[in-house]
Image 1 (cartoon, rainbow, N blue to C red):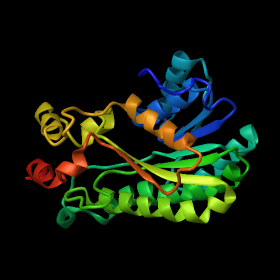
Image 2 (cartoon, rainbow, N blue to C red):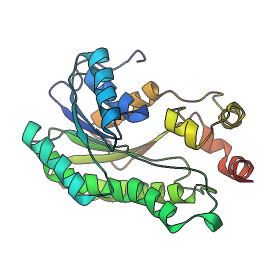
Image 3 (cartoon, rainbow, N blue to C red):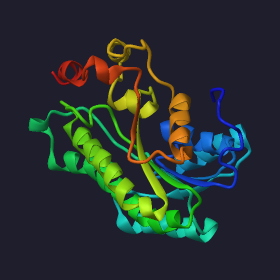
Image 4 (tube, rainbow, N blue to C red):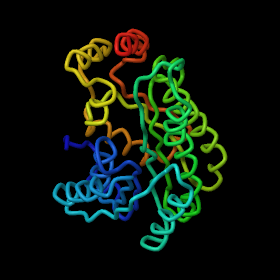
Length: 270
């Protein structure tokens, strides 16, 4: 973990749920909440990821994470997650919708199943989990939802159009819920993280070292992001009492320099 400028007790007494929390950025988010005093729950489709993730959190922070296998594409599975949170904690203070999927594929060659899989996880999954957790968040203290988007959500996403369309939908949903749930004392924001070299990202988006360097070349800051520094952005959004409906972009200036997916994706698929 990186050194944090935030108080270590900032989330003392808070209950935080992170989907896709067994690995990668989601695990970093959950670990950061635990390190700052929160009880944490992590959800994933993979039980082994959850077991390893919970062990990582315990080693780093001493916090025993609540875990549950969840498929965000399945309404009953999501409802079971919400029921577990209610039974264990009675309410929820922070929800981070982090579960995602992505891979390169031109639309002309993309199957219906490929399109549906990504949209169903990213957009529909965010809807399902947010709706299921809404009653829990209404019981929370200074409740906050943080949705994870991408810097192609507001421009174009060539060769990852399924992800781009889904992330654009999540950004719109974020702002819609910010208005609908403001009177419920629930804030809803989005984080647009930089490119983090997680195992999933490496396998699906830049499996070769030269591909990773191509991405670095599109980032004005000159490096990839780390999961720990992205976690600090999530913590800030979750703790900022007056910020709602916002999208915090922390991508090293990449979106200002231009969308890299057209050049990068074309070389990847050709």
